[in-house]
Length: 100
Image (cartoon, rainbow, N blue to C red; front, side, top):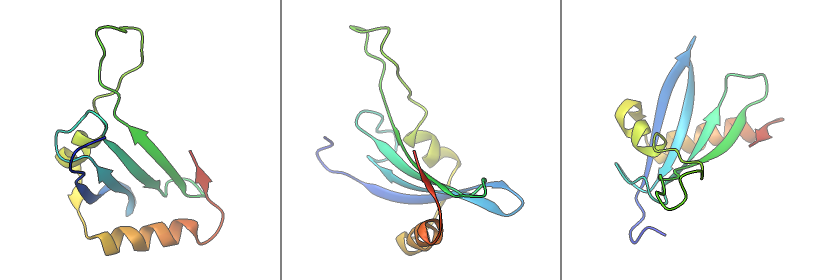
């Protein structure tokens, strides 16, 4: 676990006024143990997913890794308030949605 967990909120334009919304835990540049909750409105049913950072492990080189998760959101996302994120979350769960 991160010793001090930073939580930040972002959105990122996808197409035609549609945004992905992100709740990022771990902080800028924190790849180890960081993750983000993503709300995706591109499909008919919204998708809520969790994306974990999995750092490269030289001891286990075949183990999957992904360093582009949370720090990438800091690079390309537009900061938003927690309230704006919660509004997107409530919209996503108001009807049918998918959890991945």
